[in-house]
Length: 357
Image (tube, rainbow, N blue to C red; front, side, top):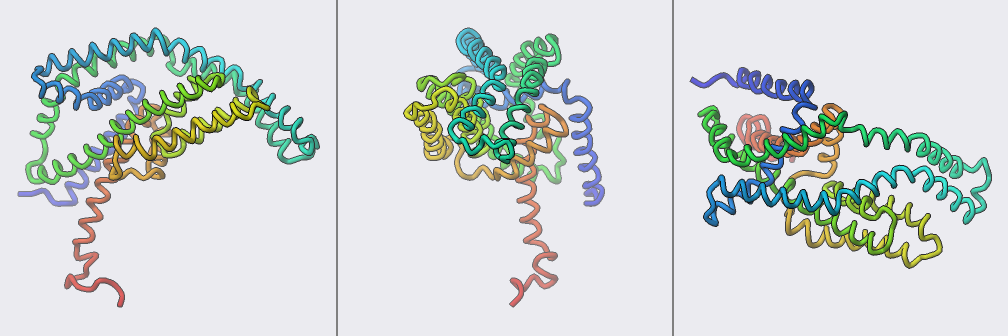
């Protein structure tokens, strides 16, 4: 005998409440495990591909782990030291850059020299804010890991969690499937498959796009000769998953630095702008259509809202789970809308009538 709908709703509501409560209470503790699970999900198709080529699951997992270790070692030797140095120097230079921008604007536009000018007051206020907050920002970034222990936990625990979850991923999915309520299992499997396609297209596809765009912006800005080009380019690539935001944020920061560095050298300034114009063309016309596709189902506004809400409530862990939760809610909302359109509530008691005549 099936449980009444009202009781089922209460049970699933309690499950959802428990999920939120766990995130609220254990967010920091869960970080390495959430990261490890996300990496395992990201790498599972690679493991499946290696299995189809003849490797066992253990061999595929070990191969992927060794390749990832090699990539991390190369990054640690070649990229991370330069990136850390540039990021630290850029944060320390922000107050000076803002002051030089104000001086440059006042010099080139004498009308702004009027102390009563609203624009000048705004620029001065911005410069003072950057000057006051620059040190705080640097300290916050350097202390964001909270302690050396947290860093060690991330470095050690995340690879271990990723390895074991990747090794047992198929068994884990089969176990979860065996625990589904039998009455609703087909519908849950269908919804889970749609959620997986949505998350897969976005996380795996956009993750690849972000890496490629970060490399493109960083290489382009470094070839132009922009100070902190590596840090600015990777920052722009990192937020590329929000449409246009990566180009706008990175472009504004790059042009701000470029105005101070290249003032009068309009060719170099034009090249800085051209890097982001070319990047947008590459992303919009080639990378995103091929790697992500057009049916992800995550509207940019909905994505920004989910990131903002989960980030504010649960911190960095909340931002990590925001995308899969937003994708799941989107799929469930479309499913609920389909049920509503097929219901008597929408069609009326006789099932007739397409609306007001």
